[in-house]
Length: 266
View 1 (tube, rainbow, N blue to C red):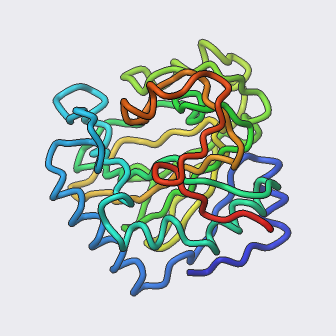
View 2: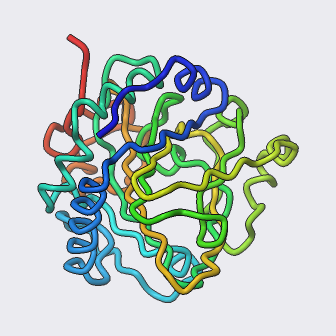
């Protein structure tokens, strides 16, 4: 892993709400992580969330044709866990966001199958069980992500405009701008990546992806992270039922089994 950030990358991230990081994984690491991801996705079948009691399964909705989405692979695959919970990665997250520590929220394999639908503009953090202006995600390309097969696009600076209102990922690419018309005035930036490159984005940065117009798969592994000390906002999201029932709004989300610390300063 290339886990050294430049001062320019950190400054760009804090201004724009996203930053690209070329060459994050070496070629052998790409192959190792890709194999682990594909093995786990195959073993999960239609089940969307690994290692818990949710019954979410993929089907034939528009959303299910945006990407093959499988969550919390780290809970069942030690190789995925080793990458997504790497302390050196955790330090990168803290440098980018200027906070003292992060816990895993959830990881996701996001595979745009051949001719998959576009990913509508959306924000991440409003979906989750905590609200924070410092939530962050890593997006790792395990195959080249191009303008043709659905690379990521970001809207610079929108993390400063965002509240915690959001839309679902549906057929209308621009639904988000009904809530945030000011974002429609921002020029989007595409971020094509080679396999092994990654990007980081804030949980309130507007982003999306084009359709996969090719016969190949666009394979990516992502992970979202929650600042240490974040509190429950009342939304279940992916929390397992017994844990969800034990919480009340305002409780600190500090379950070391479900959301372990990736890195925290002493």
